[in-house]
Image (cartoon, rainbow, N blue to C red; front, side, top):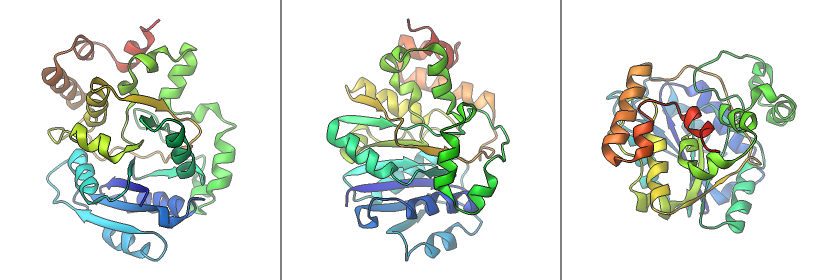
Length: 279
């Protein structure tokens, strides 16, 4: 098995269905990858949905009780069941362009020691309602969806928008872990395992992915920003609604854990301002 795709989810079967449909349409043969849906305590029909894809995907399901927002724990639970050489962390509600998995593998052949960060068209740090592509999504017409997305700069991932505004990649080259967001990540299973996986002390949205990226960066890993592996994030409210106070607390936790000048800056500056400051 080459790739294990880990999808954390919580009470969003309708979004998960679109993610799984996009995996069914991949040009990479289904024998080359497995899908593990890591359920953070859903009470909807998530398990039944996963079972309905069993004839089309090599798909597994794991469940943990609903004890609040535990995406880090769910990702780790799914990773423990993975048998692939590579781990692909993909969020519910993210659909992949049909060649995305092949593109990730091709990049691994070129840079086998790099961890890949993928962007997601349509992703904003804060929820913005957008039904522009609802008809294409309803019909699972993902090829037309991605053809349309490439023509609309307004639907770029907010991280890519920032890099385009700055006009250079130095912020990414210097602090790639600030771009290490959990919706679209790809790397060697052994690298994620050796880093210790996601820190399960994060119990509100945001930070657990960036903190893992920081640990990987400090351990000497290199990162590739892989724009060719296209993905689309279906706009939807976050499952955790704790808001800015929780985000601030997560930044404090990261600094308390790492005690670095750069993590101290996170207490007073946004990630965008830190990236902009790199000249």
